[in-house]
Length: 400
Ligand SMILES: Cc1cc2nc3c(=O)[nH]c(=O)nc-3n(C[C@H](O)[C@H](O)[C@H](O)COP(=O)(O)O)c2cc1C
Ligand SMILES: [Fe+2]
Ligand SMILES: [Fe+2]
View (cartoon, rainbow, N blue to C red):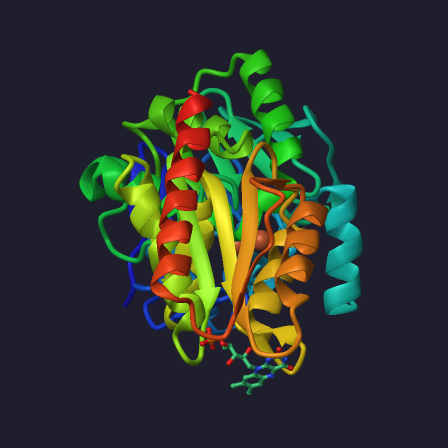
């Protein structure tokens, strides 16, 4: 029998572990240690549940609820987000607790109807709407398009708890439910990875929403997201880090992402890296096909520049590099520089195409040079690339 985990005097974690999840959002976000789908139970005069979990794990969530309330009924169910990782178990929940009143944002109601084809007489709520459950007041804060139209958070003012849904989440799976148990470094790294791979395209909205929340001056003792650990000790550090993510604040770092069959483009990448790294600027070099896309996005979030290389294959960059450029085009990149490079045989234009695509993604080009290498780079070619790497490092350092 699975038990709930108490998180304060009147509230419980009733979520589930998905220990085997290695690909979140299809293959868009490879993860290492699984994740959790967090749901919460608030015991008051009225009993409230915040979110459900993926449908296949719903038995476990119901067991955890029963472990606290036995045969009592749930009065309210808050649907903070209709994405199936948090709403998949909703119909099952309503079968179990048919008198529970469901609350969702207007967009949430529309999506729930489109996904589950059944109207549960939802109560629509909007930002700063409140409901009382007895001693507790639940205040709703919508966060449209961070990252779906319907996401919202729920703040419990008497307990100073913010149920933040996908915001501030991370893919960490375990029973160490809190940031201080898991360690600040790991928690922030995982929050950054989550941000870079899910939230980055919505950064302008995140920046605005963080300012809106700060203006509300809510005392917050706990931030309880819908994935991973609960923040209670490092809230200040988390909020500062999130503002850095939202503004894409960058370090003196260059990320090089390339694909190469016969290693010519790889030699170019490594010659560029030599010049950058030897000049005191941090450099990360990733062969795209050998690297977790999640790691690349995470490293890119706080890099000042990106170099993208590909050999020319059938008059195109490698298909995974094209896919990477497509992903970048959704990210609304701010304040970063970039440059393409690569080796070709008989069609010189792929490097120029990469540059064009990088410009269209919002990167400022580091140079007007076209780094297109015909077949094998000579010793002199590589020395020139290393020299260019030094120049790139100097540009990066001059921005401090
Ligand atoms: C499958 C394949 C298709 C290729 N198609 C083209 C092409 O359409 N145009 C071109 O200029 N070179 C083409 N090439 C030649 C490569 O661009 C050239 O060998 C280059 O040096 C490869 O870089 P790499 O060593 O980084 O893979 C092709 C090579 C391969 C292996
Ligand atoms: Fe989501
Ligand atoms: Fe989620």
